[in-house]
Image (cartoon, rainbow, N blue to C red; front, side, top):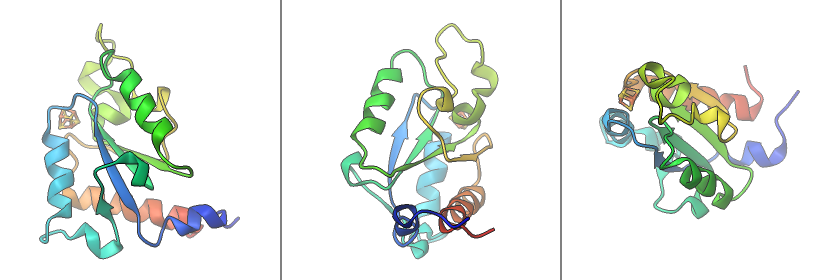
Amino acid sequence: MSAPIKLKALTKSIWVFHAACSPCNNCDIEILDALTPRYDLERFGIQLVGSVRHADAILVTGMVNRKVVDRIKRVYEEAPKPCVVVAVGGCACSEIIFRDSYNACGPIDKIIPVDAYIPGCPPKPEAIIMGVVKLVKALRGEK
Ligand code: SF4
């Protein structure tokens, strides 16, 4: 089945908002690395934006704790729909070592709907690019 028209439109030039939910910052550094000219994520039309109100996708990093859980919900609510959510790194995907921590409220897919997962601690820029390309293909309805 092909993807709905609105989702297909997202594959042309995805603007992404980066939401850091108390990460150690290594995942964030790898996301920024993927955007540098060396890895050049912008060649796929992907651009980082400063406001979630301009975003087509939200990249979430880190373990969602009690302090940020309401904020990430609000970030998702403020994003124009349709909006895709990508969990970047083991903390966002499955909480890894922080699972069962007294302060853990995640993983992120328990808080907001997640469309793609990019595991790793941290994932390399190549893995982030592969995850984003797979997401774009899925949105286009390609295999
Ligand atoms: S997945 Fe690893 S690198 Fe990423 S925020 Fe968690 S601990 Fe840090």
